[in-house]
Length: 315
Image (cartoon, rainbow, N blue to C red):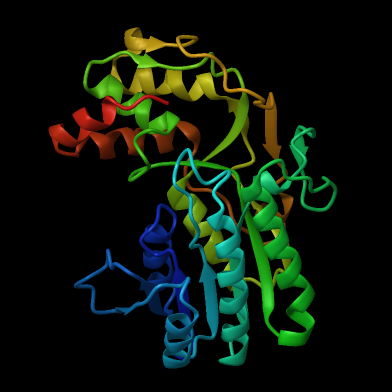
């Protein structure tokens, strides 16, 4: 790795981004972050550029200043409970297209984007990059699918090598407390009942650190096209809930079935991971137990007031 490789990472302060930054640094990249705030303030090896990506003039100024060779685009509106239908998905498509064009005009060579498993037709239990039809049921999924299609179609003209990482279901430290895994952990650590649905739906869960490292591995590869960012193991969510009960020592407080099953929940969403594992050569570090144990320990290390406030939020 040489110092001439400059990567611009968007969404660096987000759930995935804060793990991707140290992974990029470890591989010798000159790392540039962009955003309205900087969670890496004080780390001299990271160059932060204050800008709003939704404002084209600010984004172009940053791009011209950096002249990045690589782009890892993670930024998007992923506000829990809102992002599926938020109209600013349209704004993010437009901003991402302008970002991509500016990156190409600045001489950029390799770009990797964060997509979603919500681009797929969820009527199929195994979601495979090369075989499963794309038929998103939400505005969020439709916006991501549209962006991928446009970026891929323009690649021959821009000369930028692109890949598209479809994220499945992730968890880990710094997760929004109202999401299932964080809610169950914080409730049990506070000695409160964890009210859950029956949690019989089967999902591929991946620790956020593995998700971030997978994206960096894709960026380093020459793979072009979609790739599932997933563990390759699909299990009922109740298995994860029960493991948390065991790891916290409070299985007695788990209340499976106390909440109704979310409407229109597919029974099984499994990811094909041949591309990630064999073409790109990435294997997750964490199994489900190891990942949940690390996450429980992280929450245990938080101030009691933080855990208490988190435990009061349902899923």
